[in-house]
Length: 159
Image (cartoon, rainbow, N blue to C red; front, top):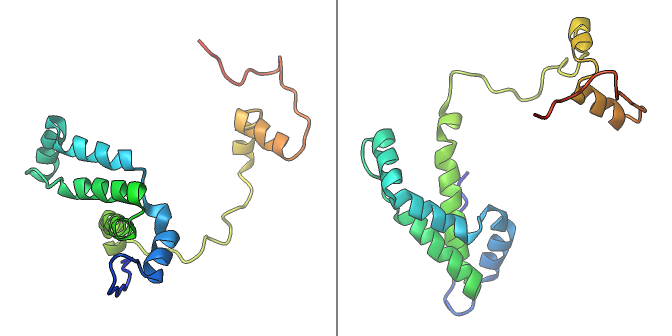
C-alpha cells in the first residue's frame, strides 16, 4: 500500500504535473492541520508520555507529527505541493503501519465474497422478538408502509 510519486523536477520553483496530479488524487488522505498539531501536543504531553511508557515501555518520537503539521501548514498557506506530497506519503506510511497486523495475519482465511446466504430471512422467533422495535418500524417506514404505533408500544423512554 505504498504511495510514492516518482517526481523528477529540475526546477523546484515550478512543480511537475505528476506532483499536482498526485496531490489532487490523494488529497482525501490529508487531515485538517489542527489535528496534526493536537496529535503532536498530545504525544509530547505528560499524559501522552505516561501512556507511551505504559504501552511501548519507552517514550516515542513525536517529531513526525510536528513535520506533518508543518507540511500541512505550508500546503495550506503557500500551496506547496512538495509539502502536500510529503504529508500524503506520511499518512500512507501511518496507514500501512496501522494495518500491518491485519495483513500479516495468517490465522484466518480472508473471504473473497460474502457467504451465499448472507441475506436470508431471520428465524421466526427472532422476527417476532424484533417486531415493533424502532429498527423494525423505521425499516417498514422506509419501505413505504404507513406505521402508527402511538399508544401501542413505547419505543424509548427519556428520563
